[in-house]
Length: 221
Length: 178
Image (cartoon, rainbow over all chains, first blue to last red; front, side, top):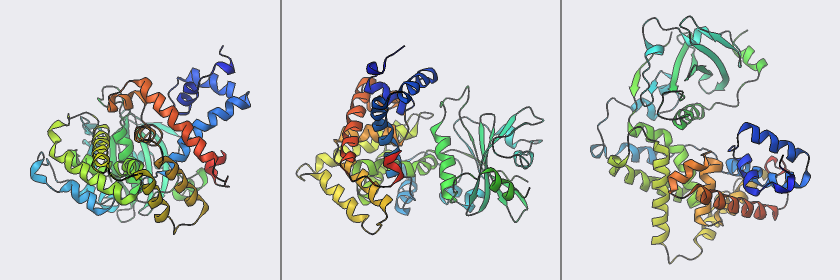
């Protein structure tokens, strides 16, 4: 068992940065809880991380940068398909877009006879799970009030769907489906999927995830 | 009820999706927002010219962060004669946030100012690890330096930052007290 005076700055920093194994982290946390001096040293590392995250938020991107990306089309590999729907976050995206990230083929979620994830989870609150007839497990990860209405983040095995209520059609549209990176994927725990989901949610002005009461009310239960 | 359109991801689509993060990273290096945007734009142009150098299936975020960092270093080198560049950048931040006088805004501007006073290599690792949430080994691979160097830079930067922020009058802001 390690003694408090043997705990190095590197260990405390690694703890603050989530670099330790669960066992190591638990052990170190219990030492910190029992030792104010150690707690003060740890706080420096944890505080700097959280302050920096607050000081550098993700912000709306000026048009000129998007134009810079879309310019010079002749110099880069040709587009396989029109990508303009991605340009405008919000309704254009919510209008339905499945991004096949990397090698992900959206066969299961788009093929004929698919199980409608939105319908299957319509009665489920955040944190609850269900097994669908196709054998996949769905889990509601969050519900958000957004500028285009209620949106929900649903996990279906390794795939993450963002579905948004479509008041006109009276149902749900899939705004985004990305492979979150499970076994066999070349990108471990794909940052891209996280960025895509965050980008979408930020783009439609999603607030913090709804609590159970607000979610129940939003779902009309 | 689901309407579905499948789009195969294109490098530029991925680049568009990365823009908010690229801007944030550039802000950490360049300080002022307009300089950060210039940096991102120059980096995008460089990336589009060198798309052949991007290995399909590899991480575009890491690739772009490297381009932004290298572009920024070139910019600094080109401005060698401009003394105390960081201090200027820091002043610009405070100036640009002058309108927003809430405590929290002021406080976070001070965090950015403290950040701007740190050496370049420390700011890079701080942004990649603390803000981007990258793992040490990922940052080491991106910067082509040993893991141990990432940790020592990061540790020095954190302690220097904590020291600078201790000098600030303690505010009721949630950031400093937790």
